[in-house]
Image (cartoon, rainbow, N blue to C red; front, side):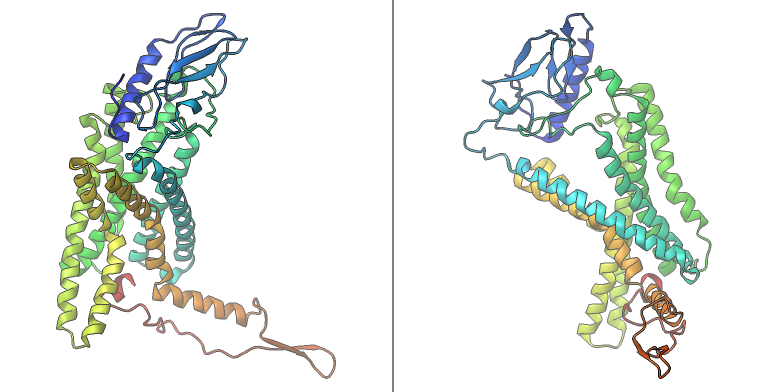
Amino acid sequence: MERIPTSEEEAKLILKAKEIDCIKKYTNSTGHCPVVWDKLFCWPETPAGATAEESCPSYYFFNNINESLYATKKCHENGTWNSWSNYSVCMDTGPPSVTTDVEKYVKPIKTISAVGYAVSLTTLAVAFVILASFKRLRCPRNVLHMHLFVSFMLRAGMRFLRDIFDEYSLFQNIMPWMEVQSNLKPLEDRQGTWSCKLMTCVWQYAIISNYSWILMEGLYLHNLIFLALFTDTSAITIYILLGWGIPLGCVVPWGVLRALYEDTLCWTRHITKIELFIKLPVVFSTVVNFFMFLNIVRVLLLKLTASISEERRRYRRWAKSTLVLVPLFGAHYAIVYTMTFVNHHFYNETVEAVWLTIDQLFGSFQGTFVAVLYCFLNAEVQAEISKLWVGMEVCGWRTPTHSFLGVNGSRIISRKSRPSLRSDQTGEANGGAVKGTYL
């Protein structure tokens, strides 16, 4: 009996090792189905017309695997495998194990993630179009917002492309109700191709770019408040170059080193020091942003405390400003990383499930929060949309409010008069300590 892994990551590493061993066994004999890896088990060479039987694998991250039973795979008369492997008998139908908390939450968590990224992608696209369509909104800070929106859209888009690119996921292979589809080409033809590795590189670039642009936004606001070296009309070229250049400077050497020293499969294994090119920039961005966030919140609280106002109103403004800064600086990542550290040293499946839920919930919906706070709730954006709305009514593009027939039978249209909206009437609904900068 093989050792049962205690975490999903360990299970993935075991599967990758067995996958590599399976590649070495590949043959192409006539009258037989060749050795094939179905992403869970290595099926041996089998005579045409026979059905291969193998003991249910014990090395997968599910405690309800019944090793005394056998999985099957049909080899057709023409020497080709059936398109799916039958693992249905491997699932123990007895009482559920007490260690299946993570398993039962996997599907809901994946659903939450998919919905969150879809909503974020939609809202970010709308927000980007709004900021790009109005000339009056193209100030430096809004241009930075647009780049931040693009980084979130890139991450969300790559998330869906990666799912489409994968033939089937690791979790689907073991589920009895899933018929795993496969073209059953030799493994080295299906994985380890340049397209697969390119997809992994772009995915890594999307992730680092997102963290990089969260850092650029935080750095820009920090400079405006503390250094007094920049104004809202200052050049932002340096931020744009760093925002997109830093991720490129991380992914390119990572890809080169992977190609030279660890060119295995699809570059999805992360067990060597080469991965520091990917992990360190993310950790650095998160730590720096978190300390800048704390510093800005400290200054905001001091300024609001020194102002003459009612205490309840003062703290409401402080809370509102803090709420705006949280997605801007990605401050919630500090909570996620803390839970990751705790769970790594004191593993608990319930904590693991809670951590995965929080991580996917914030990660997938963060783009939506950013679009709402920095576009839809922005007083300047609301003013521009209001002026456009009034202009459409005046030009007759909207349905008139009243209409009636004149004495000669002609239709007379009467519109409700509205006061003109001047550019300085941007509203105070979203005021606060950072009103002039990010609200």
